[in-house]
Image (cartoon, rainbow, N blue to C red; front, side, top):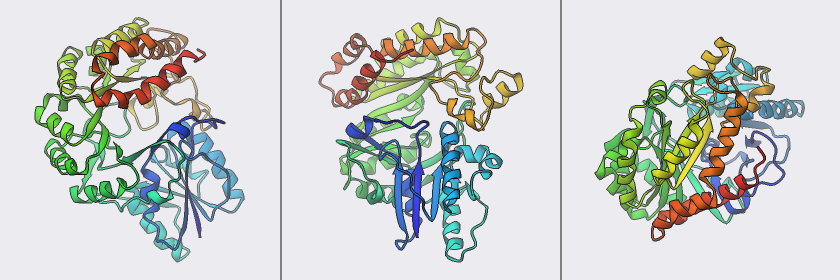
Length: 426
C-alpha cells in the first residue's frame, strides 16, 4: 500500500533556492512515517525542502496549517477524484475541523501519533473512521523518525527534533499554548544519536525550550558528549539563568530564538508577555557573553502600534546587537483570541474562506489596524526587513563577533535575507 505524507507551501514556487543550499528538515512527517509498519510503502513530499510532484496514493496524509489550507484543500479534492483516501492533520484542522471534513475522508485531532496508530489498525481491517481524536498524553512518547525517507540535495541539512509539545505560556496570538508535555530524556538522546548519522546540525522544535528549566538542563548535560551544533526557541527568562546558558554553550548551542514581540511595554502586556523591553539589553548580553547568538522576533500590528514603530524597532534590535531577527505582521489565525476579536469587530480584510486562508501568513496584512492604514503596516514591515538586513547593518552587527563560531552560523541567514530584501518589490 502506497502512503504519501505531504506538506505544501502557501503557494507554488518554481525555484526555491533553500532546497539547494540549506534544507531545514521538519521532523513531523518522519515522526508520522514511523507509525506505519515497514510493509507500507511510504513517501515523504515536503515542498519546502524536497519539492512536490502530484501523484495519487492509496492514502495521503496532508499537513494543514492556515496559510496552506486552500492549496491543501485543492490537492485533497484532486486526490479524492483519483480514488486516494485523504487524511488531514495539523493546527488548522484542530481549529477548523468542520471545514477540513468537507475536503478530507478522515481528520486526526488530539495526540497525533496515537490517533494515527489507531488509523493504521483500522486500515488493516478496512474500517477507517472519519475522525480520530485521542486525548493528549501527559507523558509524551514518539517513535524514532524515519529520516531515511527524507530526500534532499541540499549542501547543508538541519534536522528538526521535538522533545516537547505545547507551552504553559498563554500568549494570546499563539496557537501552541496549553497542554505542555515532554518526552523522556533517554528517548530523545537515542533519537539524537541516530539523527547525527545524517547531520550534526539540530533545530529543536519545542515551542518553548527551557520552560521546564531543570528538565532541559539535564537534557543538555546529556547532549554534551554528542558534539552537536544546535538552536532552539525559548523565552527570554532563560537568559537570567547563568547555569542554563553555561550548559547550553557546553552542549553546542549556537542560537537561541526568543519572542521579544514589541518594544512597547503596553503591547507586551496585551500579548501576555512577562519581561519588559528595559530588561532586554542585560539579558541578551548574558547570552552573548557565552558565545550564543540570539534571534529576536518582533511583531507589528498591535492596536497600540503606529507608523513610528518600524524604525524604532529596527534601531532597538540593532542596539541590542541581535545577530538575527524575524519581523512579522500579527496574524489572526483561527484558534487565537485575535481571530475571534477581529472577526467580531469586522476588521478582517479577507473573509472568503477557505480560498482566503492563503493570505493569513506573517508577511501579509489581513486586518485593519487601529493607528495606521493596512498599506502603511505592510510597507513598514518591508522597510524593517530591508533596514535590519542591509549590508551596513549586517557588518555593524556581526563584525565585533568575528571570532565567534555562532556568527558564521548566522551568516547562513543574514546573507540570503540581505539579497532577498535588496530586490524585494514593495
